[in-house]
Image 1 (cartoon, rainbow, N blue to C red):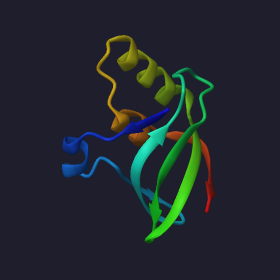
Image 2: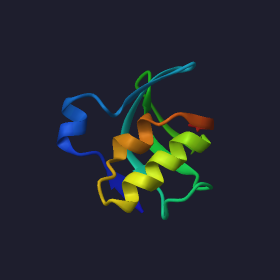
Image 3: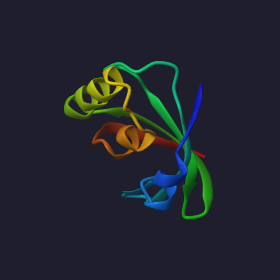
Length: 91
């Protein structure tokens, strides 16, 4: 399922992340469930090039995301800005 960033998140640039490959500007996140093993897909651009970035959160990031989700206060930027355990870029 596609999950869009809120206008406030975009206004405050919470949809932007520095990667070794360049600056990732996220349009949305794609995922079906939230758990420690979820692989998220970020649809966006790196250096004006359309990309899909698949990533998993590290254990601390996943724990925080699960907690916020349990309280129904999870924002897409909470997932996006959490520390990633690994990622791969698909063009």
